[in-house]
Image 1 (spheres, rainbow, N blue to C red):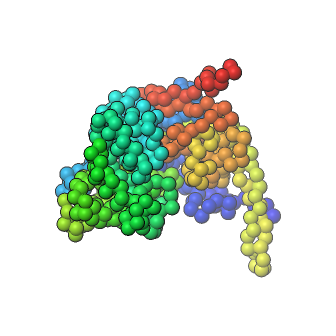
Image 2 (cartoon, helix red, strand yellow):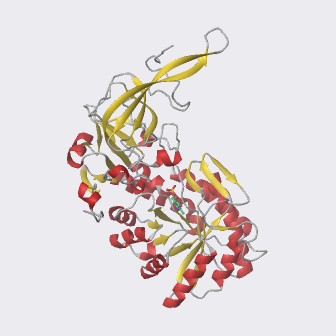
Image 3 (tube, protein in one colour):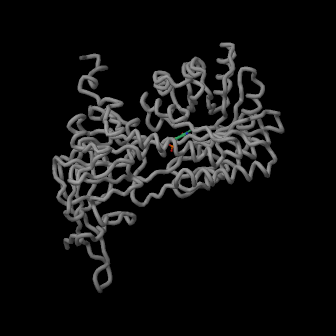
Length: 492
Ligand SMILES: Cc1ncc(COP(=O)(O)O)c(C=O)c1O
């Protein structure tokens, strides 16, 4: 039996969370940057610049970023956390997590908005240095830092090197000692709290590559956890200035409970270390991970709400322990840049497949096979500019951008142009059934972990990034050309 869901009826092929939108042209505000709206003619525009104009100037695929939105979210985190923690530790240092998206323009925005910068490699440090941000405002992460990266951090006078393991602590201490310098160090601990989206779990051990375990004995010294052993070792090195402790419990987290449990555990540990080793540990970094809206069912909390919840826990714990509060820092990436950006694609090939679904047989027992359509909408990018659906099964959404439409909703799957059947950009979305080749689609929420994860698979050129501010569009990263693709081929 073949069936088509009636107009506005949900397709049985759609996931339970996906409703048929009442208006396919509407923009669900939490998913879009400030300044994105439809023109009177129905076309998507950002800061008043229609997407067709962006395509004409810069081509597609294209990352379209609102500088205004980025700056506003950066400021919102800084202001909200400063206010919530003012009475506890005089405010919070917000380190923008550059791994989510980084280029020199963004480093300058971060600095101008009063934030600091979190990096995770020598390459990210090179971008920071080129942008001219003072080293004192930069942190370096990484579970496998090279000696060259540690030297670079010291050359730049970095505000903090976040040490991830005991062997790394010894290497940093030795390199700093050889240079006759002191390295400013935080210790990254695994508090046994792992959070994802709405849930967190607290376990005794963290079975993962990052950080110093707070649980059990370290393999080096019976009776001490790796975290405690690192504090003791750091305290014994004249070339190490031990600033404090760090943790990062996960990503795309909506509920503050996981952050709160991690903060409590780290404060307990910090108090114990202060009294046992007479080390001050004046700083505590609670990492990043604040969630954003990728689909209409994601409900991120405003920064002020998260900040207040975390501050309440830190305030109470510090009072219970009777200690001076450490200076708090956080490292949001996605929550600052994610929503600032959408990806603009041009539609190419369209194809509709029929999928069998077993449904209860009408009146009788058993199941009937009913066939429903699913439309594949191919775009001119794909897994090379957004690897998250393939890597993490991440869900996205999309709208028809070049025009509005009153056509009926059709369950669609937006796919890329790569030689890979898993090359999916948006797994399930209702789009107007008149979407055609040459139309433009916009996928919101692609500011974080998309461009930075982009590849040249199938020798596709990586897209450029255009930033909008006060109605003006400027490229902050140009798209690659064919010449770039052949540049490193030594046979050319
Ligand atoms: C140590 C650390 N800090 C901060 C972040 C930023 O996380 P998010 O972009 O989810 O805020 C990450 C992300 O993986 C991280 O590993």
